[in-house]
Amino acid sequence: MSILEEYVARHPRSARLYERALQSFPSGVTHDVRYVTPFPVYVEHARGSRKWDVDGHELVDLVMGHGALFLGHAHPEITRAVTEQAARGTHYGACHEREVEWAEWVRRLVPSAQVVRFTNSGTEATLMALRLARSYTGRHKVIKFDYHFHGWHDAVAGARYSDSDALRSAGVTPGALQDTISVPQGDLQAVERHLQSGQVAAVILEPTGASWGTLPLAPSFLHDLRELTRRHDTVLVFDEVITGFRVSVGGAQGRYGVVPDLTCLAKIVAGGLPGGCVAGRADIMSMMAFRGDSAWDARQRVFHPGTFNANPLSAAAGSTMLSLIADGTYHRHADGLNERLVREMNATLARLEVPGCVYGLASYFHIVLGEECPRPQGGIEWPADSGRQPPRMHPELAMNLKRAMLNHGVDLMGLSGGFVSGVHTEADVDAVLEAFEASIHDLRRDGLL
Ligand SMILES: Cc1ncc(COP(=O)(O)O)c(C=O)c1O
Image 1 (cartoon, rainbow, N blue to C red):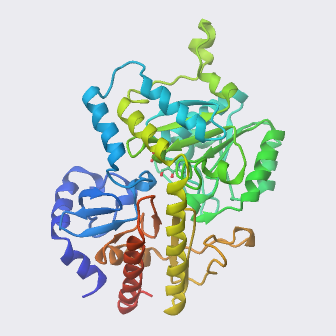
Image 2: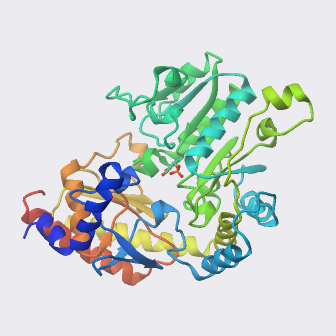
Image 3: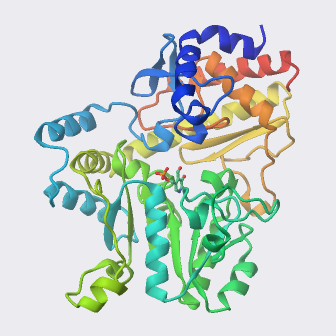
């Protein structure tokens, strides 16, 4: 049986659910990343590092809620906090103590977080950060970097990619994009050229590199960018939706000692429930403050409604999550397991003489197969200072890796990455390594590798 035949044979109930889903959703899915052909796997329940699909297969989960579940599925203390809160009400339409506590945790852990405002997602957080920067500086343009992902609102979802000049999303007007400039990652001179125009409100980036470090970025670039943006009074925005509370307790800014003006957070911050925030300099954040002056309040202030902002359930989950991870114990555990995983996956590639490499940072990793690339030496990180970028895996190979890993009991994040959590175990790593080796054999058998 080929990988595809085995995938279809193992998942009859998922296939049937997908037939139903196709009646309700375009392409049958509710998030682009969950689009897997010929159909995705449907999950029935989850606990800790594992989840079970509707056909009864137990999977080691490396998706971890798209990176949100740093303490795994249904963590007992988070579950208790959320269920207790649910019994006391899920939305007061009023201020509440839990939101204050939640913000205090963010301020305690994130170096740039003088003041916080909660949103419902990472997309809303980057939207808010750019709007704040524009209102604070009185300038219109924003700089982002090619392939950096900041959600799906117009200013970033449609930004051009320099190599293909393609839009990422149809339906974004040229008008919405005219103030977004996308430059190659790491190109400080290009940034400086644009900053010299005096029209740039903000520079936004994923601080460990495009698409959660798929294209890694040298940390020295963060220091250079900090210096440059400060010189041009431009607001530096770290999009730490993935890296926040992951690459260190204090995110990338904590890890590298570079404090941005504004930080966008989501995923881990909300403890596995929907939520996000912008955290940052009090003077910039005060662009949202009421002043009791009607001209300011009605026309100059940055407007921010949002029915579910800081809802009590997300606040309960988020504060519990942050309180549990604050001392770094779970980070040391997750990072240690990820280091072993990445090293041993690379050893497997070397032993089986497969072109490719696995690299990562802290508790995430990315796999490249079928392309020559250097394997990390003396650690798990891609040598970002080398000036080389990792090659891209052929999409058909990546889709088959995803299917093969599922056939062997592992769910990768997207097609070729993974998030290790604070509750994964050595046994999980063993299982992933076995699945990886078996998948490589399958890919070779099918003539894909
Ligand atoms: C770096 C980054 N920014 C923003 C977002 C958007 O967040 P959300 O999916 O919560 O809207 C994501 C989502 O994966 C992300 O990875």
